Length: 151
Image 1: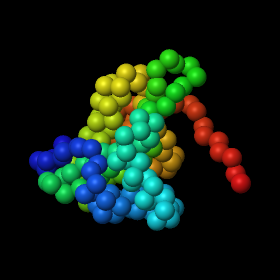
Image 2: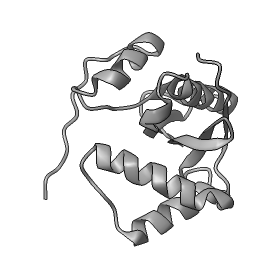
Image 3: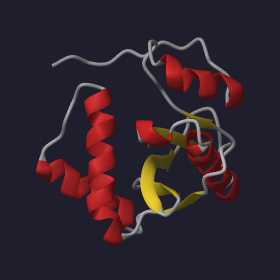
């Protein structure tokens, strides 16, 4: 980690503008976007208290929001406990290499441990080489391939 200070904390209502900037950049990386209605709904869910909704964390580097992670707990047919799905993870390119991605993932690991979730999993694109360098160090790649219904 560099000498920059990385702090990971829960998303707050006052983070809306910074969160939206980071999330828009994340979505652009994956060549997609969402409507303002989806943004509003997603942000409201992140701030809500429904345990089945998403949880969100912001990473600050030297006091400036520079990364985010969204995760949720859900039932699993092979386990009694809920498992944790890490859906969105993003670090501003200007601060990559500061430990921000690792800090965000480790914060999700800690939340999963606190909730008694025995596993944390996520997906990424096969050619996301930069992120996969980190993922290969802190998680195990599985042999599963994702399929999705096409409408």
